[in-house]
Image (cartoon, rainbow, N blue to C red; front, top):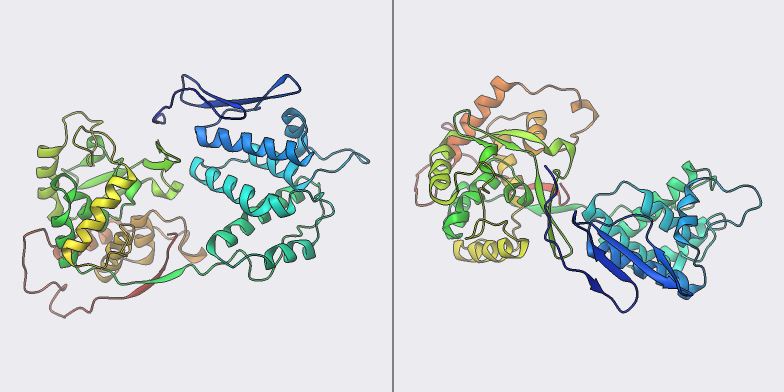
Length: 405
């Protein structure tokens, strides 16, 4: 499906010009000595175009500017004797040629502009040493953003090795680029899930149940459409996601290729989902399952405010993320008997370890799992004495998981 985006009108910054095109992309240009210099490529967002202009202005201010067209040739190893590229010049060439998702591109631009180029941008890449990088790293505080900036620098210089511009990657600091990715998550009980759902706006209540028991990311949920729901087969097709880039909402691929998946719907959710679609979803196959009052995509901030309020009403810790519902649902799916490979399939994860890479998912077993998972589901307004599977009481599990899953 073609990307959909909220377009902005042409606007002019204090330095440089950004123009929107009919296809929704943006161009950027500026003048040097009376000559117009245009970006060698278009940008998916105005924010990206303006950051490119900021990078160009930084190069001019440092006296290291060269025409962008010349920098585009940086991926080709320079002849012997030709002046080597600086870290800033190589960063521009690598960044403009790299195949990076829109949201990741915005983050990478920020890491380069704030964390990397101010200190290392002027170094020739052939003269950047491990000691230089280690000294740069000692100025950091070890925050997650610092580790991510290190990862960007390492990736950038690794590409320089592949392009035979340098022989060894100097970005090699022990412990850097590996922030702690674990935090303790106590999955909600099925009763808590139902209470939070009941506290959401009526047209969004089903989203909490789908997010939990169908293991959907927020962007996947908010881009789910009528055509993606098969109530007869009890399957929903996850094919797209909506992400925020700057102030724009962009519809595109799922977070990973594994994110494109068919999710079984627990039978107990079929009736409330059918009722939701009859009451809140237009007959158009493209109609969103979760939408604003006028049928538009729900913005991150709108969903976040409703979610936080619902947590408070339900008496749940407001630090619990909507994304944590995936961990809740997968935890109970595991308790219902799902194998590690099935959990990988359900969650749309890329890997669960090399040993699981080639393990096939048994549909018969998964159907059995979904049946037991359906028995755990509690709906808003429903009260049950027992919430365990079978006759044995269950203890609410506590797991440690990656915050970036």
